[in-house]
Amino acid sequence: MNCLSERVNRLHPSATLAMSARSAELKAQGVPVINMSVGEPDFNTPEHIKEAGIKAISENWTRYSPVPGYPSLREAICNKLKNENELSFKPEQIVVSNGGKQSVCGAIMAIVNSGDEVIVPAPYWVSYPEMVLMADGTPVFIPSGIEQDFKITPAQLEAAITPKTKALILCSPSNPTGSVYSREELRALAEVLKRHESVFVISDEIYEHISYVGHHESIAQFEEIRERVIIVNGVSKAYAMTGWRIGFVAAPVDVAKAVSKLQGQYTSGPSSISQKAAEAAYRGSQQCVEEMREAFSRRRDLIVKLAREIPGLEVNEPQGAFYLFPKCSSFFGKSDGKRTIFTSTDFAMYLLEEAHVACVGGDSFGAPECFRMSYATSDENIVEAMRRIGDALAKLK
Image (tube, rainbow, N blue to C red; front, top):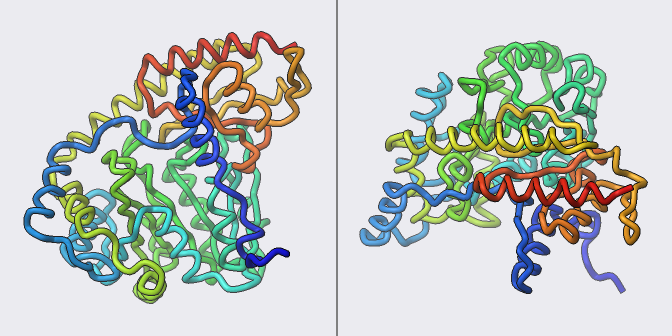
């Protein structure tokens, strides 16, 4: 007898977390796995941010915080949006949550009704369609292949919009592809959205500071659609604060109030200590952000060069984030004599078992011909991982 809800039964486990867990299991058994499956900076949280967290504990910032976050942090986020993005927000438009993932989910749950359609460009972060399903919505996928740098076109967006469309989820820089939409590309999408006044945009900008093409461009900059843009961001990636669990929504006031209302019922306010650390991140020196970005840029150049030297992989050059998303379908149908590769998930499992490198198959990202590798690891690990992958793939005939 199945006693679980239909909501739970129709969800899929996170493929990235599942592969990371399998990698950890093998490591515990003594297998020298290089984990390139999880999107987490390998840097430690900068010292001045850690010190702010320690100070918060010493000063007894240890009680329940306001549901949408401390006013001082929300003000710091408004200042960040103004100074870095030239976007004007008031604190009542900011809701601080337990990580960017909760922020995305809160935004979706706040605006999506049963039967509403949400456009999800593919490849996509694995949780987007699952969150839409949790809200009883219907994810509508727009495919974009490596030949178009994994970015959708205005014509594709126009064709996907129906009377049931409630929102578009846009992620730039992108997880899983590292693609970055230029200002001109965003303007072209905004022109389409301008004609459809009931469609929101959930703009996931969590990788904003990990860009290799200059200043970050937000789709919220376009006045004609600004009141329908919900920005999601946070401190996890830019400041190496994944475990601190602080994300935020910057949205129209009615949407922000709705997100806060939901949050008040299922988590209340985020960690008081983490909020004080996040405030220090936003108000303090940004040199640490630039140093990490430069390291990721160097690693991007390294992994692209090495991946392009492996016969059978088709590789584009990501412009942001810390992921490579090669096309691996040329290996489908091939075998090492023991295992045959039929899907990208098979491909990723083969690399884990044969090369001891953990990656994630593209099936879960809506791109079954590709696989994702995170280069948020050391140069030495990248070199060794690519050597192992090259050797393992050479065995497939």
